[in-house]
Structures are given as structure tokens and as C-alpha cells.
Length: 119
Image 1 (cartoon, rainbow, N blue to C red):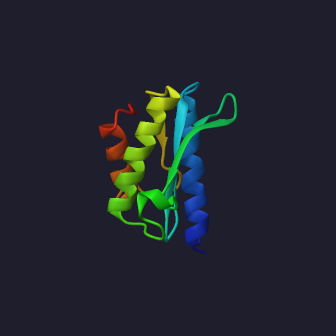
Image 2: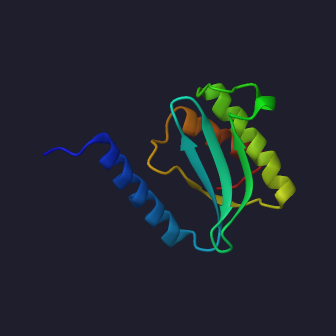
């Protein structure tokens, strides 16, 4: 029987995260979550178990509450890059989870790169 969309998503998320964990041990992880209405990203130090910086389209000062589009994603990426600079993070690895690197996820990654994050 065919796998459901949710099962395929979970398998893809584990596959991506395990591959990244092998290659990028000790680096900060840029984790992205996308829902139907919002997008959020955070920089996580897995060694210490702490979130160093975070940004989301749910923040009212960004002006994109309830919108999950390319413009909102690029603005979240730019804000996250600024917050990463203040936290002292310049290098990370991009954990897209089970989401495809397309549309909003790609826009967030490109905006974070333009803001100075290296991954």
C-alpha cells in the first residue's frame, strides 16, 4: 500500500536531518518550519540544547501575520540573519526538515545568505 503524505514527510525529515548531522557535527543548525499560514526559523545549538536566535512570520512587527508566501519567507530570513549577527553566529547548516527546497524555503535560505549567514 502507498505511504501517506505525512509518512513520506516524516521519512524525508529523518533522512535529511541524519545526513546533515553526520556532516556538520558541532555547528549551529538553522531549522525551518512551514505551515499553511506561517513560516518560522531558528538557530539551534544542539550541543548545548539552546535556541540562539529565532524569527517567525507570526511577529507583528514584520507585518506578515497569517501569510506564508515568498515575501514573508524572505523577510523572516533577513531578520533571522540580523539576529544571528547579534548572537555571534556566522556559520550554520540549513535543516529544511521534510520540506522541499522550493518557494518559501528557498526564499528564506537566500535571504539569510544575503544577510551574512554562511551555509
